Length: 372
Image (cartoon, rainbow, N blue to C red; front, side):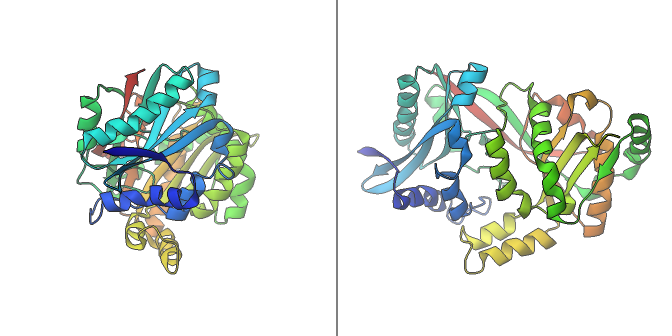
């Protein structure tokens, strides 16, 4: 018999966070989350995502053992501003038992029906800065700290339960040796002169902070036209600023501004923490934090996390300025591989940015939808 229980207490939520450690035990491709970080994300008093969203965390039990988990989410900003009556689900992990999957999803359907939603979609998080999509190709590829890994049977479960594909994402990788400066060196000089632009680079985190709010505003403007986009609120800006910016190498954040110092483009790259996260197994102490700091300083792989260009400057080659700055930084640091996080397959503009680097698609993922 399968029993579903909502995780509410700290003990229950800790069990919720730790469950995937058993599902992917000894799997060389899974990247464990930081347990304390996950718990903070699920804390309604700390994560400002809950200002616009409600979420419920469910555990599935069979023979008194935890066999699955799921989060049921309604992002009310999405519902009210975009008029999408959607209930989301995320943080979904399960043993290969479709009855467990079915029982967990029933809790999502229940939340949706109670609030007059008309469809369910997932896996996805609270907002656009959370992880998204179930892995459909690339099960033999090591993940990153900002993607979910899953077994191949997850897809089969969704399809057998009547879900259809809603959005498709691709992830790719290219060696830094593929980056030839002749593709952007002259172009960036011409673009700077033509549009009176200049780049901003940093060596200290404190120098970045005055620009971060404008960066998130530009992020909202850059992606507003995408069908799945939900804008980041002012409170969320402060949360992400405190939680993430200080953890990213300042030299990996690049800005482009116009003659009046208005931000027209930005990019955030992160060092790869994959190897460190696999070693620390979710624990920051006693030595996990030191391993992460070491990876921050010495990792030879980087992950392109976010890139945004103001609508007025899109298709004008502004990213050549950013690539030129990264070329200098990556050459100095001896970077080997550049990894791209999930990008909507329909977002052709972003894909064209990388064409000269000959990226190889190594993973694909999808979100699945079902009418209620």
